[in-house]
Length: 627
Figure 1 (cartoon, rainbow, N blue to C red):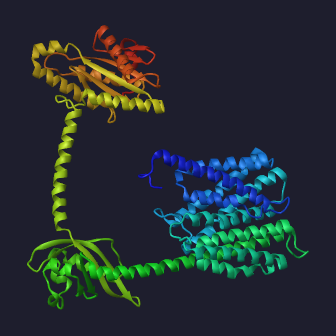
Figure 2: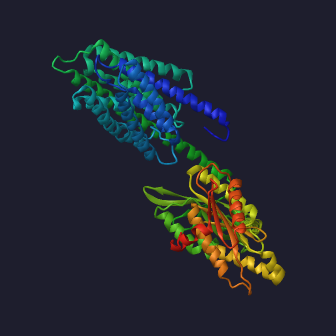
């Protein structure tokens, strides 16, 4: 469904309806499988497998867990509430069916390609669906389900496995094509009244012939339905065949399990079930293959007819530049638009070759392109420069197609258009875009950096602080903040002047950047105050870093007068503190550093437990200097 034209609320309602329909269908199909089984035996055909596989094939991958949950709920009602199975065994069955559907859907999606919806109207897809998509996953799922039954009831493993495997495979082969064909846009529905009437007649003929042949001689003459299936395939293609296979399966299983078929007395019930499953499987695969082949032939015929119409219209009414080249590069035909754009007439075409009107700069590439086409290589689009009769250069863009006869290259059809104005405009736009990007980069840099120190400014720092707090809330990682204030900076300014003070601030900023990590965020917070944000850093590590910063700044030299800093450190490790509280904690720590003599580091965590520099300075001496 097109998300650009459908409101989100409508999409959710539609998706919920689809999931509800899947739930009801799954439950009803499970009960149908039970009704069509032999008394006190496993299901000969398990329709929920086909519904499950079709749902995952048609639904986006991100919605698969929803369908898995719906399948689990439907299976819970069927297995536990209706048929008194244990929760553990129910879960085992559900896991087996889910494994089958997921493996089959994943393989068939890969077979169809990343950009295409899986369709049974293509023969390779039908063969892949029958072999690897429907049968192999069922065998793997049967191992899990049979193991669960063997553990619960001590049933014989291989005989139960064989029935489960074929029942799941038949469910995929017979039920899934119904939903896949109904959702396939490549298939046509009967539109005329006679087509609808013919469909009912064909269905009635299939039901009648199948019922009669099964009642008279069992599976011996059951294959007499093949002419009717061929009729349905020819007239109604895959959708008709999918419904016909389902009707045939219901009739066959109902008469086998409920009414009884004339089997030989020497045949066991397991052999009878296997014969029925083999008949239904062979019929389904054969009829689907025939329907897919006919669908491909119909599409090929339709494409051929449409191509002929397009080809004729192309020559007669094309406004683009169009030429037909021989394998030697000479022009065999050019339309009026081409002759008008290049200034040639019909007499010139007699002796004109490709090299005569291609720009000298593009002749080598054009010759390579021509040889590539003749050797079977293709390209989506070509761009060349041509010369007009007057010597002017024009840019052309378009496509080429190679026409062959008896496997040999015959002609090259080229459809191009003059894009000279667009090329000039693109170049101008590219120059303008580069200028705009450069200007925007400069403006952004000016908006987030301090003009004096070239560190981040306070506004940008606040923004990054909020972003880092989001990380703390999500992952609970530690986050530390350093607030640094130059001690007695006003006195320094009064003594040495503002220019010297500015140089001190710049040097302090450089020392900060040299000390912190690459992912730390350093900003001038205001006046002589700086801030550093340290993601993934606890309080102790942040205090060690702050002490290195303090010592580096104290080491100077600073124009004959020592420069020291007071640093407040705050840290949080949970989501119980917001950004403003972290700043407040760091500010309290900074205030403590100033009140206790300046030129020191004070740390404070979210519980307001303070670590003073006097208390742990000796300990820092013994710690590693690396963070």
